[in-house]
Length: 325
Image 1 (tube, one colour):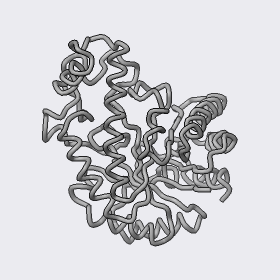
Image 2 (cartoon, one colour; image 1 turned 90 degrees about the vertical axis):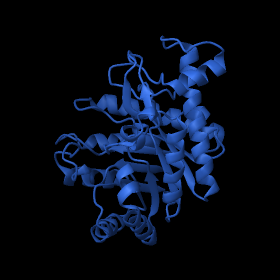
Image 3 (tube, rainbow, N blue to C red; image 1 turned 90 degrees about the horizontal axis):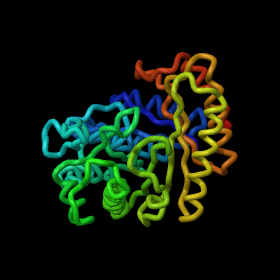
Image 4 (cartoon, one colour; image 1 turned 180 degrees about the vertical axis):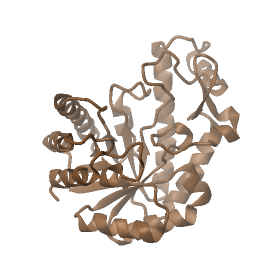
């Protein structure tokens, strides 16, 4: 049984070590460290020390590309497209977005360097966090990507110009693009002797990655995950229903392809009095047979004010109890 939390925002190894010792003492046996573009550019040695000392404590360490290129989830800023405008995803309205295109060779080259850096540490698993095409909440009225590279690849594949409608061919192209990207990246991680976990956005997000089986069947993917987080004001029934639905989808596809499963529990922006939602989410995950559970993030995300839970101590207590610690 694996129980863990994500951890970010502190880049002083001695302070991180104290928190890792606290995580270990609480009974957790795993941690996820975020590794952003800023970390890659300015904190490589620091990040290596943080990851390695976490592993030396006996924690199983996951690392994710936090907000990198805005192709992955996370609150970290990305400047890749500011440095190279050609790398931008282009939306239906013809305007470039602040996200890199997963089909662009320069973005893939950057990710190879990121992988090289992360895999030089004692990391156990690279966590591919919510890979997606750029979207805005509210739907796909201004979908991406229609950059020059995507339109060229689409025409080569389907024999005609990419339409402006989100047709079945366009949806297939978007999904094919993400699968091709993940295949290339996860194979590189495997070649460096590390595991891969791919966390898919919940089914109701227009991420361009709908067929989870295509991810799970990749030989270089060891584990599949999801994070059906709830919005403020969601009912307990919604939390129970969506976690049960997502857990079943995950476990079904994992069994089909012989992969491990991981579920993420929301531990940020938790309103006072609603901490039991974490217990409900854990309960539904356990019912489905999932024995690898993480929370986002450590101590109710108390270090990031925008995400901070109203009562971090209670969030931490409820989560620990829910996972049996």
